Amino acid sequence: MIKSDAMYKKAMTQLETTEMFMEKEREKFVKMGLTSDELELAMQPIVSAVKAERERLIEYKEIKEGEFPQSIDIKKVGWLLTAARIYRGWTQAQLGEKLGVAEAQVARDERNEYYGASLDKVSKVAEALGLDLEVKVKL
Image (cartoon, rainbow, N blue to C red):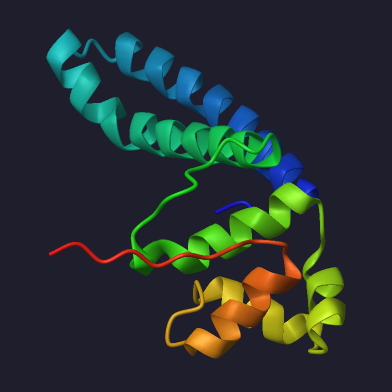
């Protein structure tokens, strides 16, 4: 997940570089005389990498615009907390300040997607972000 504008810009630059490399590789393989099936197979790893990076960029833009699910599986709550911070336009340092913890702690929690965090911690982060968390159980 891209977590800041700086990371977004870096990812954009990397995507442009990778796309240029992809085109050079395609030209090289065509000159080598690869069939269309062979070309597709040879290009698959880089095409997959470009697709994944585009999806990460799109996800970040959507989060910034507030376009992310309002209802999620409990296992994705860490992702949602990070998305809410991004949407609010806060840095990890700003969230840390609101929580009374170091930026490094927020970075660790986000890197681990709040895995293993207590309900109390998740609740405090959600409250700091202005989220109203609700748990639903279906049998």
